[in-house]
Image (cartoon, rainbow, N blue to C red; front, top):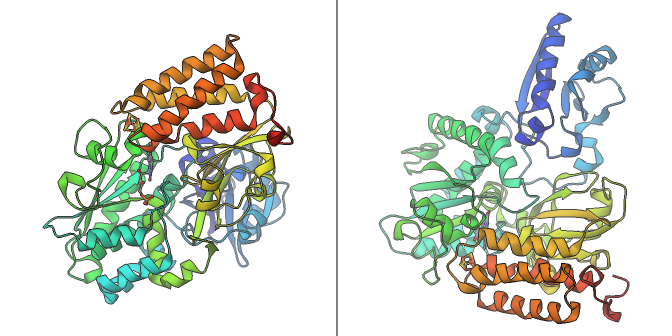
Length: 519
Ligand SMILES: Cc1cc2nc3c(=O)[nH]c(=O)nc-3n(C[C@H](O)[C@H](O)[C@H](O)COP(=O)(O)O)c2cc1C
Ligand code: SF4
């Protein structure tokens, strides 16, 4: 009898040896005369357990990990193919507490299906959202997305339904869907996981968006650092055209929609939507002044929906199950689920999809399991390189757009990076300013010049300059950056810098203020 084993083909799993594990399974199986069928899937997002292998048993899939190629013989001896016990056993996959605790709506198929099999996609519920949208019509489709309360997962949290409606109501012969897959935030990998593990859900989401707003062409702007995602997505596009998910008559409806994949050239600011549009047009990736909004005048001057991968990939669920099914999950004005990407110095790093509202402390201490080094957690940077450094005293903050804005932070694209007590927060503040200087598109003075002046100020501190005086100048500079910058690169760089100063003043040679004591 053929035994089926699942091994991820996702870049994260490959980077820790998934290809070697799969090759050893083939070789060892052959030596033993075993009939093993290996299916390469996306990753479930349990990167702490990758390379994770799963075996299909009569009782469902059973998982083992992290597995090295040298473990394969021992695993086969122990009865791997029957799901038998071993020191690397994680038990039935769906019962692994780290996975069971999640609410998987957008990532439900990731790590489960063959990413390039349209029939496997459909067998696991794929395609239903588009079919329902086509049967509902454009107005009801827009209404479902509005009712879901979905807000952009790229960083700004803008309501997706409102954006779609603006483009739907714009009068133009040509409209576009531009998917932002630049995924530049530190510690983030949700977009990559979708594109490598369940690419058809993004294709379906883009087709729904195209139908809803009247766009027949979509572009995906992917960062050059993701070659595996590019290869998988390009193959998925070909399969989607063959299978009628893209083309002249999507899902047999007579509606036309197709997608082109474009690769960026390695620039963080090209993730900013207007810089991305410039880059897509073949120009230098420089931020455009707004208005006009991309929804009115976007790609090639036409009305354009710009959405993040996760935003678009969430819409097939919204349409298949109804906007209220999505809105039922969440917290406050942050509805639905968010794929939190836990990274840095953390024991259980990976992607954890859950409803908004979970506290930061739960994410770091319970789900992340504290630091990998075993030392105390000192700070967590939430929301990428423009996000604030949060001290333990704020760990009861609920994971929600408004709650993080209230503490001068942001949740960005859902990434969190954990640091232990060896971190030097002055170095982190310097890094934020240096990053801004390197990535600045150069259009406005506060960001272009101010970031470099900021690096110099931090260096002056390191050289023994008067702390109170130098930090006061740094604060003043941050105010200029915050209020004088054209886009959020310059505008939000003060978050990591000033949070480092506020919560960790001793690293800047300053006394802790009573308000900061205990933090
Ligand atoms: C400097 C900078 C970098 C950004 N990088 C990304 C990115 O990599 N991916 C992304 O989706 N949004 C990024 N954004 C946010 C986009 O400008 C935009 O808000 C988003 O793509 C809209 O999609 P959404 O509404 O689905 O979130 C960035 C913004 C700024 C200011
Ligand atoms: S803030 Fe920086 S990145 Fe943004 S427009 Fe100004 S110079 Fe460009």
